[in-house]
Length: 496
Ligand SMILES: [Zn+2]
Image 1 (cartoon, helix red, strand yellow):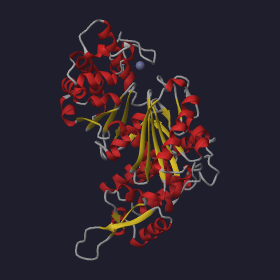
Image 2: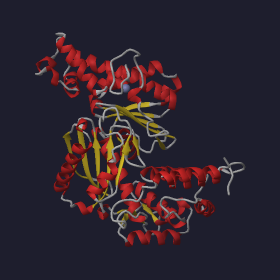
Image 3: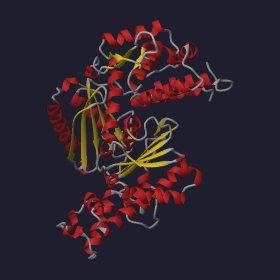
Image 4: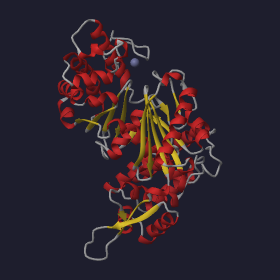
């Protein structure tokens, strides 16, 4: 058995890869994806030695949740992910070159994907003189997915094909405080409506990705003590929805999905070090550190909304005082506007009746139209956000910070104060290295992240999974035991 001492980087690469296979869901695929980036750009090539080493290690792991990981699956997965994420498609020859496999191995794998209609031959690529290579791409019509972004006050739903092309989308008001039973049955109605509008039947949907505004244990699809989701703590969201919809469902934190959406299609395209800050009713961050989503020990990483900004500031939903969310979240912006109107300040917001119905969106709209009171409220929120974001930058040194979510629709009115405070408070080299920008996908970052995630899940189920064979529900009741076993195995493996 491999020991930590005297291990080469290649061995640790394998260890990492195999360790990841013990983590179900999109995270596994995401990590593998980033490993592929490493493979393509690092001297450590994924050659047969590495793969064989991986196989040995895989075999040596006593418990393995999927049980299906073998050398063949590893190759297939690498090939599939490269086809999926190479812009404009990739040829068989290029696949063989990039992953250092023989052309015949690549051709055999591709033939299987083409036979099962997962991959199709697209247009020919550019030629260097000889025959034009045939480019491969994921077959967009092999299946469809739904991405859902549940916010505190709204829900967004997107139906997309396997190339993540949007077929239909909806955004509706939603009140997460109604609790899981009421909210999830309402969500089900919205999904049926979305399917109707997109012209899809439920059986054509192969996976659904869901984002929620709270800390998530992604492996089990439950939220843990979410401050703005009263009544949801520990509710088995994923299992409930899988039974309801009869297809694999993944549940993740909305800001993490925002980071994933922007990473895949938006401002942070394949950035290795980035933070996505979702500013809506709540405030959360999705962190991609060294090419990987960073979740922390229990899924709570990125809870930037509960950083203390003012020791004796306003009361927050989490029970503390002066959290960022209580100062700069959508509810805080609305509250400040209501107070300004009640105090008799001259603002066009005073035309909104009753005054209590003023929302952050109204404030943003008034600010855009030149209302000075509204602009000051937005600038104050930006200043508080800047303090927290400066902390994130000093801590993690990202090359990009993307501001998304509903409140971020205020654009430069919000971004300029953030940039100003970051310049003031960050260590200069860190401030110089970072670009602060708004989300390219706008309000769709998280729902598109949920689509990316759902396609991952669907592709996994089509190539390796057993969801549909087992009648719909993954047998993961023993997951806790399995992860414990994996932990122990890995400790033994590392010689702990
Ligand atoms: Zn708080």
